[in-house]
Image 1 (cartoon, helix red, strand yellow):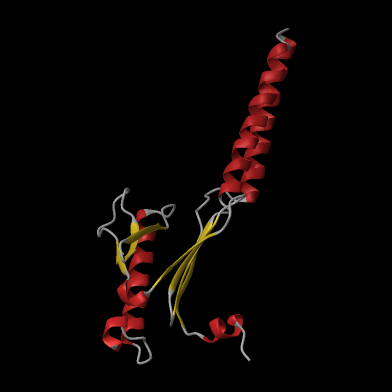
Image 2 (cartoon, one colour):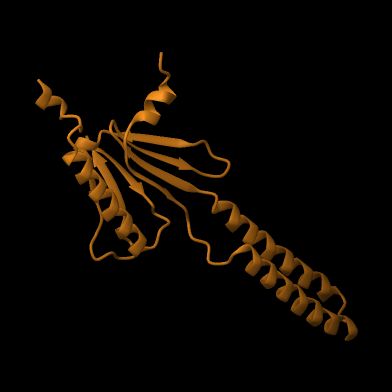
Length: 174
């Protein structure tokens, strides 16, 4: 007897991509930036303290704390990812975000259409459409990355449709 997990692992995978938002400042850069901001803030606040304006010192500390908090929130939102997977049976999109329930969409690949503007513009989106349902994927990617992703997914769908074991359309079976 095979379980559901065994049957899905036996399915051929035509496309499997995990999309992550880009963060240009890595952990080491974050530490360097915060150390620099804290040092400059401390130096300037020391000047104000020596001039007798000691209440200003607290505001410099609050600025550093708020900057640190904003970057931490940004890194927390970077935990978002989307997984797009095309197998013999279906195309699935799984969206995982921090402190939100995972969302999952399933499409029958035979009817699926992938759309993206070429050349890509800033407001261009990758849309997956099938049976009146539309889903935007990879909205956090740059326009060039969205185009690259859409092209790769379209190529994978063409390969899926050409494969000798691809399921026929439901109407064509009858």
